Length: 350
Image 1: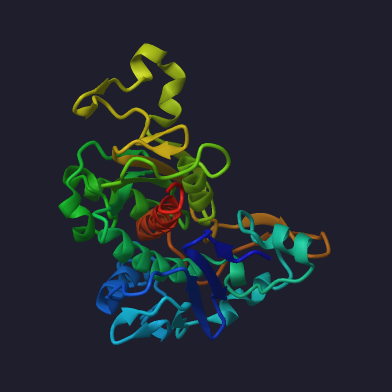
Image 2: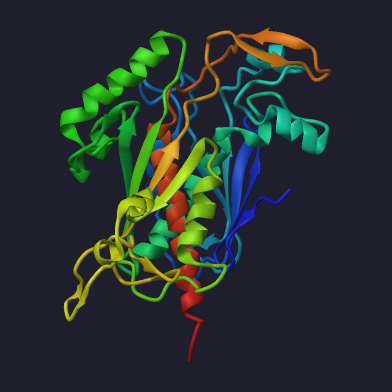
């Protein structure tokens, strides 16, 4: 089982949803980086459960503990290890799925691959694993900030409600994490309506990487857009990825989709800031499609480990929509990709 992501800025996460703790070890953090612990904690607070009535009621402080790689507030260049202890597990909520597969979850496939699974909250397949990624992503953001690069994301769609305006100062002022002030309540209404029916709802996340210099990424397998797609699809619940114009290119002509180059730079950004797998100096733009939470309170048809038909009602505390809490995770993964490519670019030529 591979639990490591990245080449030079390499992240390994560990732990399960209902185990004692989750954690991450980062190799490749340059020495001398000021490690802003309050900033790392603030990023974790954005992802943690129990933030509002629109998210799971599970309560976790997700207080970060730095175990190694820091001296006098700065990174030493050695492996940076961080730990997040679990505190509010209700493992008994999962007793009815010990031998029954939850529809829409990794239960069936995990069992078929390994022949054994931790059914408590999904174990290693749980969305809670992303807390460790957010901690690592916060470190990546600190590294990127030193080069003038920032990452931001927001909810751009919940159910049938689409964002049309983007006020980035508003994202952390509403529980949906949308940048559209006029549609925030309608988006929240979509989530409440689904939850009221015992159901869930999907949506989309829009993200940007600003200040990216030209030259990050490689032209063959490690294209920047390919690595971003890999990163985003590694987040549970993500079912689609678009860069720049995305699937909108299907209806365009080359004369419309090509970004004219002027002495001042690119006149448009259909390419999403990447050409031939290499950043072109523009803003990198991407979009994720997020599926409805598979854990719902409605009866669902499934089978047991032995193949017997069952009707299952899932118990426990679950997000009726994954989008608000995936926003900081998407930012973290984008930051990890960009930090890794930034370090790799420094060794690409004399």
